[in-house]
Length: 447
Image 1 (cartoon, rainbow, N blue to C red):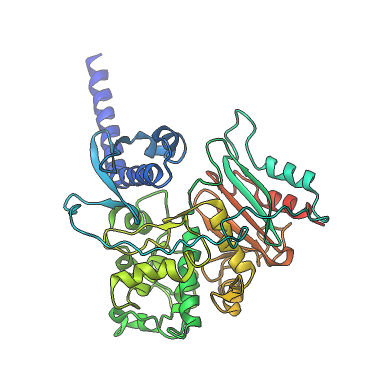
Image 2 (cartoon, rainbow, N blue to C red; image 1 turned 90 degrees about the vertical axis):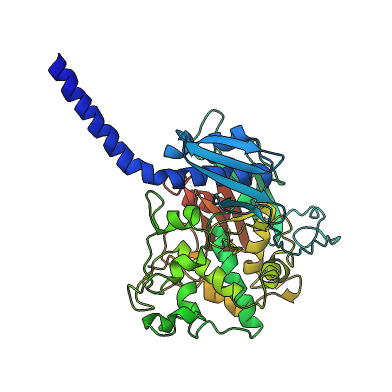
């Protein structure tokens, strides 16, 4: 018996050491994810902690995190078994940011100047409800059934759709929310934010301030092979820079989002692994590098902060939208954009209408064509910071469909040939939610 206990104890020790060796390095990331998720969810969207824990943070080891919040000082902390405690603070006008122990919370900070002018026009161009419009070609009974099919039945937890919005010819023809969510809920777009980040280069290009086909303005690359990388290469995700985008382990992307204080530097400092335009590699680091490049186009930090809102977000009335920064003040253009479903829909409509917003051209119409053009070696699945259907991934959907896509199935879907935009928010991926079927059903509701 003693011999058995001895060997059992040794085996248990080995198991504990293995678990500690493989899991302990992840705790910083797990705690960081949990703290950031809670701080944003509570202070941006006013959601209850319990709802966040049972939904957004109900992910593998993340659910082990112990959460503490302070609603007066507006911060959240998280730790796993008391280890690797992380803190995320909320600042009005900026949202939530993961901070380190040496971060000075008393230091003054800049916030974007917002121009939230409400116009007495119906949706999407103003703050009034849209005028009642019935399209004879829309089978509303079928449409409403297709929309209902995208949600779980009572007691289910499979599709986990939170919101579905369908717009046809600039009019909302269907809109449904899961219990606990509404048209006023601000949803995190995750990587849908990438498409917004790229749009600023279209705006600057139209203004004649940049040329995306010239070498990227990164002085640190001037004397090495990376000097050949263009903004076009970065926007199409085929710069050739080294990057690992794996959320299931400690990788470049998880370290960047949950450990780094200056996110653009992470991709900037990576070496070239391939020649530009020869290897497509999806990279959140590239998008945050683009955010950093944008910052360098302005004389000061305030102008950079203001530009994101004045040139696009507030200009098209996405007044609920908030883009959160890292500790260094760079907008996390890869991941941290929040807005209501209707405001996300406005972004889709901007592209559906080729950059024209209520008779004002926000970016040249050629930019909409550009972002929907397949990147070489992406098999027709990716363009200029937008996902595509050019390769036929969704076989029952027109090939001109393209979309902003985010973690857990967030989508702003643009279908030019059908004059349609579809917005979906939830907590599932393609393997758990049949996007092809959903889009097919919605499209077939309009004859």
